[in-house]
Length: 484
Image (tube, rainbow, N blue to C red; front, side, top):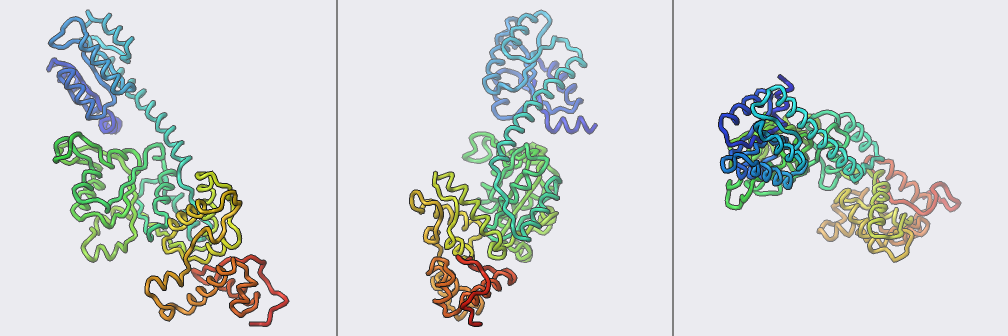
């Protein structure tokens, strides 16, 4: 029974025949085998069905009421089906006297033919074989697509202890179908985590579909999620698959889930619970098998307390929670991420720049990255474009990074409102930036020795969440150490 149940969910057959008793007998036989069956009484109706729905096999009669002997209508229908979907198996149904015409249909692309009256075992074996071949071809195509997606999958850079721990959790969770909620500020890399979860899952041969769950109006979001049928609303000129059906057997990633309208949350909860999707304007339920990932930058507990998010839905989404720390809390990741983006954009724009000079590395390390990894990527891309033609490396000036002090000034925040440690860091950043990362000159500007400045930089690096500028000289005691 399990085999038949699974088959009925994923294998659908279209029967095109104008004899009601024949159609009913075939429908009962194939439905008992677990297949989903739809029928059409004419070639026109069959083509309309094939245009709007997806099938795994078509059983097509050769002769219809207008033409009971030549089989031309059936041959014409075969040609039209082949034009619409060359990979769809078509099995011809014909009376014994029309076998030569059936052979001609085979020559034109039909997979097999069955004589009326048919043998049940022969018919079901033929159907089973053709559908198995159809699925094998699809698996091969999906494997090729998956290989291409893996080659294009975002690189997951993890040098900090926090991100290495997240990478280990991803590798443990990915093979399961557990729902994962990814949290973190804007730009921390939630999409990359979703891509890694999918790429390392058993579903990697199927698509990863992404939708911004909070970026659309209520009615539009419902259609995007669940699809709609022709005529469901004014602009619904044709049936449309929603994200759930597009992600069938694969993964659906819902970004900004906390911003989803509350009414739509109730419908999403039902789909998550039952696995059944109902297109807008349709009364028919469709089963989907989807692994659900979601993400938010909001404090989800506050959203629940305010009534903007359903607590019962959260429990369906957060089997595993992955929290991505902001980039300022994992400074070890800045340099390797920057190197990764530099290689990407240098190749994209045909630039020679392959490294950052010491001043640029200092500037990267000093910046607080309020926009997180996304800001870093955009900064490096802009630097690649702005670098001098033929330059081998990126300079600090190419990065065009504003200091935190300038950000505070522009936002109306005075230095007296900043913690002492941040003020000290700002002055060190400005001195290093002014002198191109040269520690000796920056120390002289600040009125301290090189060794004293090195010690302070080291303390910044070792402090929790600390981040310190790089230097252009090796660290350690020097002969001008006066103990300051």
